[in-house]
Length: 200
Image (cartoon, rainbow, N blue to C red):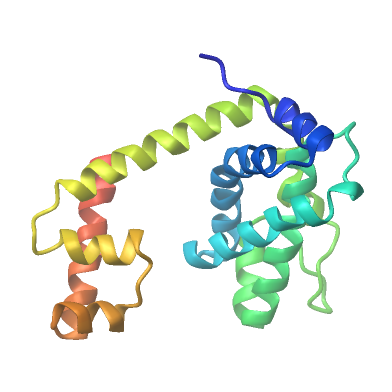
C-alpha cells in the first residue's frame, strides 16, 4: 500500500485543521526531522525536544506556511534555526566546532557566515520519494534496533530499555536496579555497542 505523501497530508491538515490530520502529519515528519536535528546537536534527547517544539509550530504557525513549498522545507528551516540556537547557548567553543563539521561557515566575529545555506540545502532539494525512502530506512533500522534490544542478555536488556526507550537518567536507573552508577554506564555502553553491531 502506497504511503500518503507529505503534500497530501499537509493539504488535509490545511483543509480541516483537525487533530487527526495534524497527528498524521506530525508522526509522518517526526522521524526524519529528529534524525536531521540529531546530526546537528549530537544529543538524541535534545533533538527529540527540538523536533517536538518545531512540530508544535506546525499547529500554531501553519498560517505562515506557503503551500507552494514542501512542508518539510519549512519545518527543516525552523528546526535548523532552533538547533542552531541550542548549540550557541550550550557552549560557544562546541558550537563552532559542531557547526564547522556540519558545513556551516563561521566568520571572524564568531557568527554564521554565508555557509548557512549549505547546511540545509540538501533537504530542500530532496524529492517526496527521497523523503519516503529515508523514512523507510530509518524505521527499518528502528525496528531492527528494537529486535536487537529484545535479544540482549538480561544483565543488559532492562537497563538498556530504561535508558533508550524510557529515557531515564543514569542515576535513576542505578537507583531502580540497585547497582553502582559506573556499572550502569558500562552496561549501557556495552548494550548500545551490541545493538549497533546488530543493526550495522
